[in-house]
Length: 206
Length: 206
DNA sequence: ACCTGAACACCGTTCAAGT
DNA sequence: ACCTGAACACCGTTCAAGT
Image 1 (cartoon, rainbow over the protein chains, first blue to last red):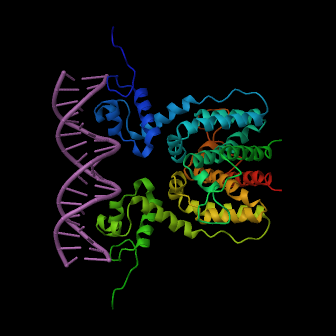
Image 2: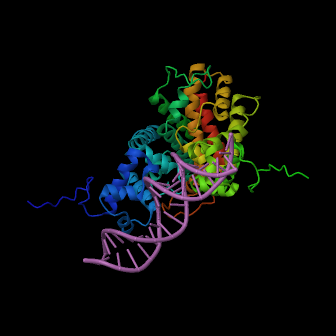
Image 3: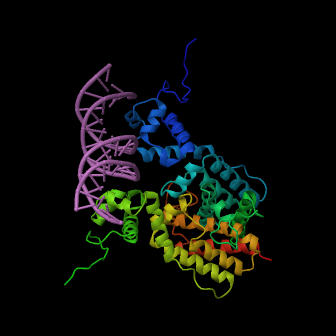
């Protein structure tokens, strides 16, 4: 019975790996947010001296980027099929599901400059859909960038609670914060957001 | 010749005021971002002991909220006139102008939970426009929340550079980063974003 | 090659002591 | 009432020294 366990669980017996570091960091971020992540705390969770991390990751910024890429790699743009409207809807649904799985990371990634990269599957997948929809090639990037920005705003506001807080405001009572028995729940908000983006794109198609 | 100067310039002779503190903090944020703002650095700029700040502001979170409110108070929703489409367009233009004046603060405010508040003129102004447009009262909040979230995403991506970086991607060359001589510049991106939001709202009006 | 302890230059915040 | 110095519990990161 040899104990080969490189389980990378919470304990420190596992060898230090780049991926293991990112995974542990992601767990901390999911639990307490990016603000609560520190190199020292991460090392503590891994059962390792804080300085050891610097042999695998150049600095904290690179650590966060690595975590983002780890999550981005999980996202596989849904296979095509159906109208481009259907494809866009499915794409948005899948992206949203991933955002809900790691809201703290998504909020940080969308807000930070240079964190969304052209290689990310979020971006390439959207560009593919727009191309198949018949958008002139030179318009795919600029139109796609605006659609991605708009939708990111929805995910961000949903993830940090702003969307829910504003949506629940009673019209007549400014500041009172009385939550209405909303005729629009979270699912409806999402549907409306996606329909709005589709309507915007339709206006740009031949 | 009495030196009554309470100029609140960069020098430390002025008395410590809540507003003076916020103003100095805003200057630091505009220059180097929220991440570079510290209580100690702020005190240094004000020519004051770091601990003195705590007699006027309970903590750093309250400081940031105060700075946000200072900027939010600068925003006066444009007077009505013209169609609701015109009003929405003007509202978005004014909001965007303010965001361009303080991009670092806007990025932080939109990303942070509990930073957008129902009392903010951004929100009340938008709700007014939607009400005047004839949206059923119970739908003003939920629809407005989605529109605000979407538009915030545009401002955020524009402010942190993501929008420009993605929009400049050449479709055929993924990852090469070659900037196209975009047939859509920054102004067009904004127009398309606003038109998209208007199209979404039109679908909800009687 | 990988790990580590000590050290440096920072943080936000508390608190007792001063005026 | 307002200010302050010292102190506490943290940070990210560098570097020389260990194996």
